[in-house]
Amino acid sequence: MEEIIIIGAGAAGLCAAWELAKNHVHSVLVSDMPSERAQSNMAEGGINAAFLSDTDSPELHAEETLRAGRYLADAQAVHDLTENAPNIIEQLFSAGMSFSLNSDGKPDVRAFGGQSVKRTFYVASNTGKQLMHTLIDQVRRYECTGLVRRMTGYLFLRLLRKEEQVCGCVFVHANTGKEITFHGKVIVASGGLNGMFGNATGSVRNTGAVSASLFADGVAFANGVR
Image (tube, rainbow, N blue to C red; front, side, top):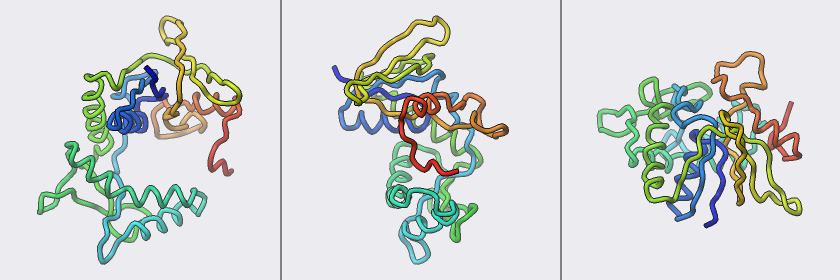
Protein backbone atom coordinates (compact mmCIF):
# COMPACT_ATOMS: atom_id res chain seq x y z
CA MET A 1 0.00 0.00 0.00
CA GLU A 2 1.43 3.36 -1.03
CA GLU A 3 1.29 6.14 1.55
CA ILE A 4 2.04 9.84 1.36
CA ILE A 5 4.58 10.71 4.06
CA ILE A 6 3.69 13.91 5.93
CA ILE A 7 6.47 15.42 8.05
CA GLY A 8 4.75 17.23 10.90
CA ALA A 9 1.36 16.85 12.58
CA GLY A 10 0.44 20.46 13.26
CA ALA A 11 -2.23 22.43 11.39
CA ALA A 12 -0.55 22.05 7.99
CA GLY A 13 0.11 18.34 8.41
CA LEU A 14 -3.40 17.64 9.66
CA CYS A 15 -4.93 19.60 6.77
CA ALA A 16 -2.85 17.61 4.30
CA ALA A 17 -3.87 14.29 5.86
CA TRP A 18 -7.54 15.35 5.98
CA GLU A 19 -7.58 16.40 2.32
CA LEU A 20 -5.79 13.25 1.19
CA ALA A 21 -8.13 11.02 3.18
CA LYS A 22 -11.20 12.70 1.71
CA ASN A 23 -9.80 11.69 -1.67
CA HIS A 24 -9.16 8.13 -0.46
CA VAL A 25 -5.38 8.54 -0.37
CA HIS A 26 -3.46 6.91 2.49
CA SER A 27 -0.97 8.96 4.50
CA VAL A 28 1.27 8.62 7.53
CA LEU A 29 1.70 11.58 9.89
CA VAL A 30 5.22 11.52 11.35
CA SER A 31 6.11 14.02 14.09
CA ASP A 32 8.24 14.45 17.17
CA MET A 33 5.31 15.70 19.27
CA PRO A 34 1.55 15.01 19.29
CA SER A 35 -0.71 17.44 17.45
CA GLU A 36 -1.92 18.87 20.75
CA ARG A 37 1.58 20.36 21.27
CA ALA A 38 1.84 22.04 17.87
CA GLN A 39 2.59 25.75 17.50
CA SER A 40 -0.87 26.52 16.08
CA ASN A 41 -2.47 25.76 19.44
CA MET A 42 -0.95 29.03 20.65
CA ALA A 43 -2.50 31.24 17.94
CA GLU A 44 -5.04 33.74 19.26
CA GLY A 45 -5.99 36.33 16.62
CA GLY A 46 -8.14 34.67 14.00
CA ILE A 47 -8.39 33.57 10.37
CA ASN A 48 -8.80 36.12 7.58
CA ALA A 49 -11.32 35.49 4.81
CA ALA A 50 -13.14 37.97 2.58
CA PHE A 51 -16.66 36.97 1.62
CA LEU A 52 -17.89 38.93 -1.40
CA SER A 53 -19.90 41.99 -0.31
CA ASP A 54 -20.32 45.69 -1.08
CA THR A 55 -17.25 46.46 1.04
CA ASP A 56 -15.01 43.43 0.66
CA SER A 57 -13.74 40.85 -1.81
CA PRO A 58 -10.96 38.27 -2.16
CA GLU A 59 -9.22 40.72 -4.51
CA LEU A 60 -9.13 43.46 -1.86
CA HIS A 61 -7.98 40.89 0.69
CA ALA A 62 -5.13 39.89 -1.63
CA GLU A 63 -4.05 43.47 -2.28
CA GLU A 64 -3.97 44.34 1.42
CA THR A 65 -2.09 41.14 2.23
CA LEU A 66 0.55 41.87 -0.39
CA ARG A 67 0.88 45.49 0.73
CA ALA A 68 1.25 44.51 4.39
CA GLY A 69 4.05 42.15 3.37
CA ARG A 70 5.83 44.85 1.36
CA TYR A 71 5.08 42.86 -1.81
CA LEU A 72 7.63 40.20 -0.90
CA ALA A 73 5.10 37.36 -0.88
CA ASP A 74 4.41 35.21 -3.92
CA ALA A 75 1.48 37.02 -5.55
CA GLN A 76 -0.07 33.88 -7.04
CA ALA A 77 0.08 32.09 -3.69
CA VAL A 78 -1.58 35.06 -1.98
CA HIS A 79 -4.37 35.20 -4.58
CA ASP A 80 -4.93 31.45 -4.27
CA LEU A 81 -5.14 31.84 -0.50
CA THR A 82 -7.63 34.71 -0.54
CA GLU A 83 -9.80 33.00 -3.18
CA ASN A 84 -10.02 29.82 -1.12
CA ALA A 85 -10.27 31.40 2.34
CA PRO A 86 -14.11 31.70 2.41
CA ASN A 87 -14.49 28.03 1.49
CA ILE A 88 -12.08 27.10 4.28
CA ILE A 89 -14.12 29.03 6.85
CA GLU A 90 -17.30 27.31 5.69
CA GLN A 91 -15.59 23.93 5.79
CA LEU A 92 -14.28 24.46 9.32
CA PHE A 93 -17.66 25.72 10.54
CA SER A 94 -19.39 22.69 9.00
CA ALA A 95 -16.79 20.46 10.68
CA GLY A 96 -17.77 21.86 14.08
CA MET A 97 -15.24 24.59 14.78
CA SER A 98 -16.77 26.76 17.52
CA PHE A 99 -16.36 30.22 16.00
CA SER A 100 -17.59 33.21 17.95
CA LEU A 101 -21.03 33.95 16.46
CA ASN A 102 -22.91 37.10 15.52
CA SER A 103 -26.58 37.82 16.27
CA ASP A 104 -27.60 35.75 13.23
CA GLY A 105 -25.83 32.69 14.59
CA LYS A 106 -23.12 32.84 11.94
CA PRO A 107 -19.32 33.16 12.47
CA ASP A 108 -18.51 36.71 13.51
CA VAL A 109 -15.66 38.90 12.23
CA ARG A 110 -13.50 41.53 13.88
CA ALA A 111 -10.91 44.10 12.86
CA PHE A 112 -7.27 43.12 12.59
CA GLY A 113 -4.02 44.79 11.59
CA GLY A 114 -3.31 45.67 7.97
CA GLN A 115 -6.94 45.47 6.88
CA SER A 116 -9.41 48.18 5.93
CA VAL A 117 -12.50 46.08 6.74
CA LYS A 118 -13.45 43.46 9.31
CA ARG A 119 -12.67 40.01 7.89
CA THR A 120 -11.03 38.12 10.76
CA PHE A 121 -13.02 35.09 11.94
CA TYR A 122 -12.16 34.14 15.50
CA VAL A 123 -12.92 32.09 18.61
CA ALA A 124 -12.57 34.51 21.52
CA SER A 125 -8.80 34.53 22.15
CA ASN A 126 -8.08 30.85 21.41
CA THR A 127 -8.72 30.49 17.69
CA GLY A 128 -5.68 28.28 17.18
CA LYS A 129 -6.62 25.85 19.90
CA GLN A 130 -10.14 25.45 18.54
CA LEU A 131 -8.79 25.07 15.01
CA MET A 132 -6.48 22.28 16.16
CA HIS A 133 -9.27 20.53 18.06
CA THR A 134 -11.36 20.56 14.88
CA LEU A 135 -8.57 19.26 12.65
CA ILE A 136 -7.54 16.56 15.12
CA ASP A 137 -11.18 15.44 15.35
CA GLN A 138 -11.60 15.21 11.59
CA VAL A 139 -8.35 13.35 11.03
CA ARG A 140 -9.15 10.86 13.79
CA ARG A 141 -12.21 9.80 11.83
CA TYR A 142 -9.89 8.65 9.06
CA GLU A 143 -7.40 7.13 11.49
CA CYS A 144 -10.21 4.80 12.52
CA THR A 145 -10.68 3.66 8.92
CA GLY A 146 -6.95 3.21 8.31
CA LEU A 147 -6.59 5.99 5.74
CA VAL A 148 -4.38 7.95 8.15
CA ARG A 149 -1.88 6.52 10.60
CA ARG A 150 0.34 8.30 13.10
CA MET A 151 3.96 7.90 14.10
CA THR A 152 4.68 10.17 17.07
CA GLY A 153 8.04 10.69 18.76
CA TYR A 154 10.17 10.57 15.61
CA LEU A 155 12.77 13.11 14.45
CA PHE A 156 13.52 13.72 10.77
CA LEU A 157 16.98 12.56 9.63
CA ARG A 158 17.20 12.72 5.85
CA LEU A 159 15.45 12.37 2.52
CA LEU A 160 15.81 9.37 0.25
CA ARG A 161 16.46 10.15 -3.41
CA LYS A 162 16.49 8.19 -6.63
CA GLU A 163 17.77 9.96 -9.73
CA GLU A 164 17.23 13.36 -8.10
CA GLN A 165 13.64 12.49 -7.18
CA VAL A 166 12.58 12.21 -3.55
CA CYS A 167 11.32 8.70 -2.86
CA GLY A 168 11.03 8.65 0.93
CA CYS A 169 12.72 9.69 4.15
CA VAL A 170 14.37 8.39 7.28
CA PHE A 171 13.40 9.19 10.87
CA VAL A 172 14.84 8.28 14.27
CA HIS A 173 12.85 7.69 17.45
CA ALA A 174 13.68 10.41 19.98
CA ASN A 175 13.85 8.01 22.93
CA THR A 176 15.09 4.70 21.56
CA GLY A 177 17.36 5.93 18.76
CA LYS A 178 15.80 3.38 16.41
CA GLU A 179 15.73 4.47 12.77
CA ILE A 180 12.71 3.93 10.56
CA THR A 181 12.46 4.35 6.80
CA PHE A 182 9.40 5.30 4.78
CA HIS A 183 9.14 5.02 1.00
CA GLY A 184 6.84 7.24 -1.02
CA LYS A 185 6.03 10.84 -1.84
CA VAL A 186 6.75 13.42 0.87
CA ILE A 187 4.87 16.49 2.11
CA VAL A 188 6.88 18.82 4.36
CA ALA A 189 4.66 20.39 7.04
CA SER A 190 7.29 20.76 9.75
CA GLY A 191 6.24 24.07 11.27
CA GLY A 192 7.74 27.48 11.87
CA LEU A 193 11.32 28.63 12.02
CA ASN A 194 11.49 30.22 15.47
CA GLY A 195 14.86 28.60 16.05
CA MET A 196 16.36 30.80 13.36
CA PHE A 197 15.83 33.91 15.48
CA GLY A 198 17.39 34.95 18.77
CA ASN A 199 14.08 35.99 20.29
CA ALA A 200 10.67 34.78 19.18
CA THR A 201 7.26 34.45 20.81
CA GLY A 202 6.61 31.07 19.23
CA SER A 203 7.12 27.65 20.73
CA VAL A 204 10.71 26.60 21.43
CA ARG A 205 9.73 23.29 19.82
CA ASN A 206 9.73 25.03 16.43
CA THR A 207 13.49 24.88 15.92
CA GLY A 208 13.39 24.89 12.12
CA ALA A 209 15.62 21.80 12.14
CA VAL A 210 13.74 20.01 9.36
CA SER A 211 13.81 23.04 7.05
CA ALA A 212 17.49 23.64 7.82
CA SER A 213 18.31 20.02 7.02
CA LEU A 214 16.39 20.15 3.74
CA PHE A 215 18.06 23.43 2.77
CA ALA A 216 21.48 21.94 3.47
CA ASP A 217 20.48 18.99 1.31
CA GLY A 218 19.81 21.29 -1.64
CA VAL A 219 16.06 21.77 -1.41
CA ALA A 220 15.09 25.17 -2.84
CA PHE A 221 13.25 27.63 -0.59
CA ALA A 222 10.56 29.98 -1.89
CA ASN A 223 10.69 33.67 -0.95
CA GLY A 224 14.21 33.44 0.40
CA VAL A 225 14.52 37.23 0.56
CA ARG A 226 16.82 38.91 3.07
